[in-house]
Amino acid sequence: MAMFSEEIRTMDDLFVHQLADIYYAECRIEKALPEMMDKAADAELKRGFKQHLAETKKQIKRLEQVFKKLDQEPKGTECPAIDGIIEEAEDIAGEIEDKEVLNAALIAAAQAVEHYEITRYGTLVAWAKQLGRKDVATLLTQTLKEEVATDKKLTMMAKKSVNPKASRKAPARKSAGAGAARGGARTKAARSGGANGRRGRRAA
Image (cartoon, rainbow, N blue to C red):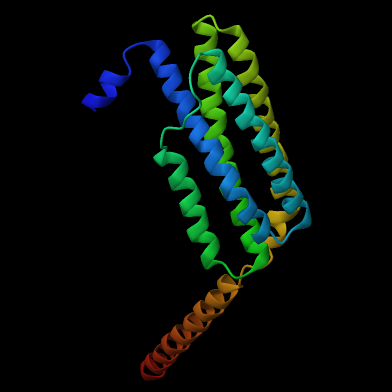
């Protein structure tokens, strides 16, 4: 924590640090997307990942433009948050055999990444404006809009096709449990009725 405080003393330092954070994240995402494309069994989802990969490459170049405007060398700062999101997605995807369910998991992972990016870019845009760097804010706003649009596309894809298909794969555990419960209830009722019957005959 002490080292972090020494490195970041001004708002400009903080801005560059967050810029390095999202630069690392974008480069990490660029490497992860081809594998997500390969795993996706849904044609529309596969196209979506392919489009997002092309978009990510452009966003990396845009970030490099921002670094240049700030007279900084483009470099990334290791980001445990994005590493964790991607690693968790890879672990979960490795455990899912059903393709429809896997598609749903891949969309969830992609949206977790998008939400992280949206948060980071939103903050960077606000800070750039505060620091009087409208030129930088304009570039970052363009990327922010792209991330929001991608998130909306993924949401629509999930709602319209991917999630409904995945949910049809759910086993009918509830009905089996309900049947067992009804069976148990009938057994108890029979025993209770038998006992009452015997008591009734004795009373007569």
